[in-house]
Length: 174
Image (tube, rainbow, N blue to C red; front, side, top):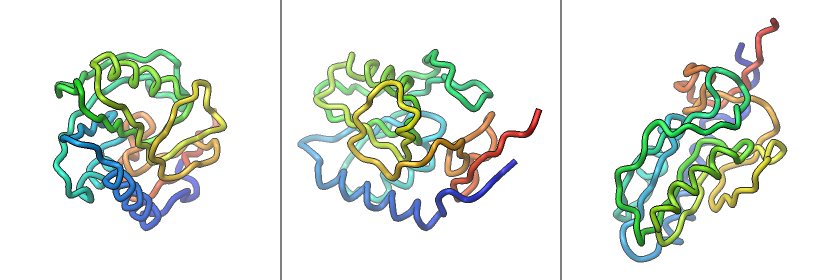
């Protein structure tokens, strides 16, 4: 069941605009690669790169660690790999939310194995209270409390991604 609105669409738009300006100000030489972590990043990545006027490349990686539950299993499975050549390039790894850090840490290592110039994490949301592995988030929209959220790409069992606001999901009683 959907609960309270955690972040309204107008706040999301403001966060995305701020992050886009910060990233573009920090661009190095050459064309960076924005790698979206599917599927949750799609709305965020799309809105983000449309606000950046510099040339860039977009690619996607898909991993799974949740299944249909509301907590990470801790086991990361590669579902779709990137196709871009990132060697010697700046990579902006775009994530919807950083929770335990386990999944993202594994994805960062997968990308670093391809010898980019840099890997910077860009995340719309972070739940620092749930962190098990420390990850360096270079660009962050907001920190949130330890609640399960859906909307703006975030899902529960592939549902609710299409909501324009970010809402709390209240587990149904068993």
